[in-house]
Amino acid sequence: MSKELNPLSRLVERIPHDPMLDFLDKVGPVENLIDLGFGDPDFAVGQTTKEAFKQSIDADHSHYADGQGILPLRQAACHFYNDKYACGIQGPDDILVTVGAAESINLALMAIVNPRDGVMIVEPEYSQYSNSVLLAGGQKVPVDTATSDFKLTPELIQRTYDQAAAQGIKVIAIIVNYPNNPTGSSYNLDELTALANTFEKLNLWVLSDEIYAEQTFKGSHHSLYAIIPERTILITGLSKSHSMTGYRLGFVIAHGAVMTAMRKIQDTLVTCVATPIQEAAASALTLDPDAGIKTRSRYLMRVSKVAHALTDLGFHADIPTGAFYVWAKIPDKFGDDAFPFCVELAQKAGVQIFPGSIFSDTAKAYVRISCAGADKDLDTAINRLSAYLKKPA
Image (cartoon, rainbow, N blue to C red):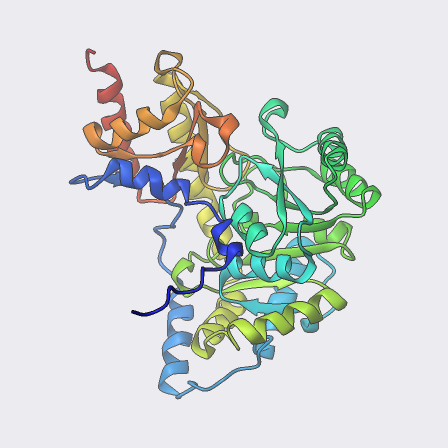
């Protein structure tokens, strides 16, 4: 008889089951389902980007690349983010090319977190943040924005920090995402400066996930990296700006010792990002830098249409200031938990949206509707939702 295998890593066992998968399992298979859950843009990748990808393959650029990323891509990214958002990136050495922003987040956390360190995570949140903190050996310190119009404030950060300290938790970092997924909230320059002052006061690392920067509808996007570069690790990529989700091309931008640490981890995890993908990305940033501007107006039209339609149907919905999601409170008659509402909506009306409980326990009465899909699907989904809500009980 063979011996019982040694147990799996306790680190992995700390990671909970993904609540999004729980929801999808509950819904089950549904014919002709319109998916307004996932945020995968329907816009095509630019033709010049496709051609660059093909040319790289045809030229047999199939060998290992620089682990930090090919120099033309890092130079293009440096120019792009400095030109768009005045980030003040010193040069291509401060940019690391990653397998999507998801890897960027994990690299950053693994570089700065020691066992049991606390990392503040703004809720509602993209669920990967919590899991990445746990995988790095840290512990999540939730910052609940439900009572502050789903936005961070210096007072809220200070209060959360103090509460964690009273519990013996050493908070060393905060993850900020704006424009926010799922709420669509963002910050003007004065608000960011006030937040930055608080981050400095508390001596926090700041992981600033700005992947939706190009989908800023109100005012201009301002990067925290431009305000406090010495403590900011900027997370970004081309999934949303250039509709390149499947290319898995991201960047992590930082300076000094933390960049050196992330490069060590990158070399261990993936060696390098595929060369043809990097060359395609360099083309995207150089020859199609305004791809995000071209799609921004379309996204704004979509979120506006959905927000207005939801309001007419009894939801509490506002047009977001950024990203391509509508964050809405369900009609009062459905109670304070949107999970069963969303399950039934998918099964009986053929429209899938995500319940707020996926993103925060304090946002159960909310739903997130993705407006990244085709216009015709949005129109059909609105009609189905309207018919479902108006159907006699």
